[in-house]
Length: 107
Image (cartoon, rainbow, N blue to C red):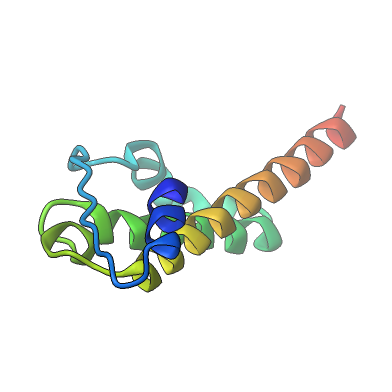
């Protein structure tokens, strides 16, 4: 997606489509354990739910029929999707740091 944003940014007025075929249950483990999410500390739980919501938003955009997949778009929607992906990655690293710290403290 970064390449698409770079290309569209350097060529004003150009458009692209981007489609990714994704399996139906792409968050299988998350969904299977969602009923137990209350077992996780609130501060981590909020971050985990937000992480998956961010990823879900981007998946909806790029899956077949999604707005980035169904018709050519200019740079702005792609830049927005890329910023969401980067935010999700950053949040994932933050969750990992918190989780690793709690695991180390539990030993």
